[in-house]
Image (cartoon, rainbow, N blue to C red):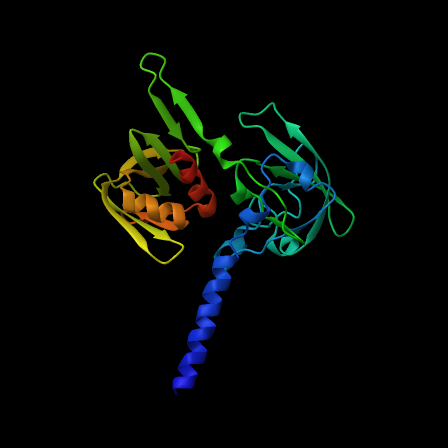
Amino acid sequence: MKKYFLIVFLLIHSLLLCQKDNKGFDERYFVGEKIEILKGKTLIALPKNEEEKEFGYSDFYEEIELKNVYKKSPKYYSSNYEDIANKQFLLSDYRKVENLISPIYVLTLIDEEDDYVYFKYDYKNPTTFPFKTEQLIENKIDYCSKIDVRKDKFTNHITKYSPLLDPVSFAKDGGYYLSLKTYGSTSVFDGTGAIILLSNGKKIIKNTQIDVEMEDGKYEYSAFIRLNKTDIDLLTKFAIDDFKLYIFENTQKLSGEIYKEYLKCLIK
C-alpha cells in the first residue's frame, strides 16, 4: 500500500512540474532587440499548460502586414494550438516597424511545409516569445539598461523604475517598492492583503491596501508595497512565481527571473 501511494505521489508531482515547465515561454531563449543572434536558426514552438491550450498562440500571421491569422483557431483570434506546438520554424529575416505606439519587429519564418509565416515580436516582453532553439543562446542581456531613471530638475531628486507596464515592477524612491497588478471581472473597493509566491516555495505576505480602477471593461487591482531588507534579500535570490491581491489571483504571464534582475539593478 505504501508503495502504491508513493507511485501516485511521484506521478502527481511529475505532472505538476510538467505543467509549471509548459508555460509557453522561456526567458533563456529571449534575446531582446538582438534579433541578429537568431537569424538563420530554427525556432521550436514551446508547448503550453493544459488550461492554456484552448486559446492557442498569438502573433502568427500569413502576411507581412500582419493580416490573416496563420492556422487560425475556430474559436479565437489566434493560431490553433496543435498546428503550432513543438513545430519548427526557420527565422529567415526580420524588420523593425516604428510607426506604432510601441515599436515591434516582424520576423519572417519558414514553417515545416516551406510556407512563409510572419510573427509579431515584442522585443521588450519575453512572455510573448513562444520559442526555444535547439541549443541555448549565448546572450547576455543588460537588464540595467531597461531601468527608467528620472531626475527632478528642481530638486535633483532621482527616482528609478523597472518597466512599469509589467504586472510586477520595482521602484527606488527613498526606499524600495514593489508594484503588483492583476485583473478581475467584479469590483471590490475595500480589499486588503497580498500574497507573493517565490520559486523556493516561500511566501511574502503583506497586509496592504488593494486599489481598483476600471480599464477596458475590466477591473485592474494593484498594490504598492514598501520592501524591507528581508523582502529585498528574498526577491533578489528567488524569482516571483505568482501572486494574489486580496481574492484576485494573477492572470498574466510572469518573467520572475527577469524581475529579480531588475531589482538587483535598482539596489546597486
